[in-house]
Length: 257
Ligand SMILES: Nc1ncnc2c1ncn2[C@@H]1O[C@H](COP(=O)(O)OP(=O)(O)OP(=O)(O)O)[C@@H](O)[C@H]1O
Ligand SMILES: [Mg+2]
Image (cartoon, rainbow, N blue to C red; front, side):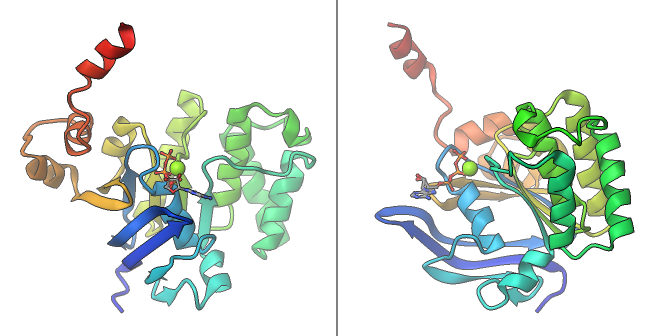
């Protein structure tokens, strides 16, 4: 297997009952790449991330992470991954610090290293002073920050981030964006979903646009522009054209009647 490939999905299909969530999806994400998953609501982004982590099992096809089959090596694969779910349900009856401590222990971190990393992240994301409060008392953005810290603190080789910047204030979002880009320079691979197309355009080396569980387009910004026949365009126009939503005027007019 090519060690430059971090994640490989081969002809993956996933049904939830009679809903076809992922429809024969194949894609490769390279090591050290920041890879964006875009697509309308319900297009299969979160399902794709959950299948790579091994939380959701495909009905057919296979998924490899660093050459390991996710089905056959569930624990080894999870150990290499940091995951930010889309609506994290974290332990509301633990304090932020207790939750991070627990996470570090689950990943088998050395105690001194764990404590140092937690301190640094709490400081960088301006949570210092609130780490002893119950997570249930945090704002949404503060909960999101705790989940981001828990995903990053154990030096994962692969980050699976489902709308990671949602709810973050501009400074914190900037810190997380810069962190992800710097980690990529160190070889850490990131797959992130986002609805904020400017974020995808600014951060991602390559972007996959999904619809109905399938790939509509995949490539660098330049390749997407070429594919859409829209030289010089931004991602928003390309996205709307490819997902067939470019003419939304009649919809708006109907809503205003
Ligand atoms: N646990 C589930 N049970 C049943 N259907 C599900 C479940 N999770 C997802 N689905 C369905 O699978 C499809 C893909 O959902 P998914 O959550 O992957 O989309 P998404 O691209 O992440 O959407 P969003 O942008 O809204 O987060 C949708 O039709 C959704 O209704
Ligand atoms: Mg989702």
